[in-house]
Picture 1: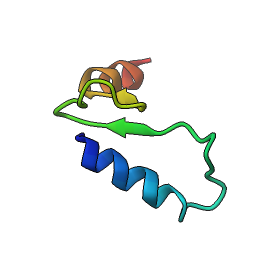
Picture 2: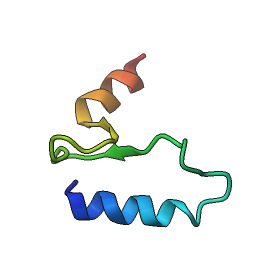
Picture 3: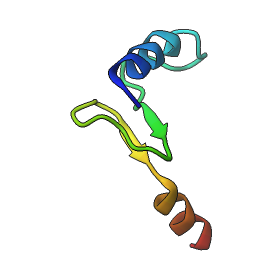
Length: 53
């Protein structure tokens, strides 16, 4: 996820019913996220761990 992707996600969050400025953003990515973005990240290992739990 790049800074551009993050900006698009923040912009489009306004169209999601119930979402607001306090809504935590979440990225699910195979390729990672640019460091420093204010977003929670879930990668492949996290998904596999959760699935096995």
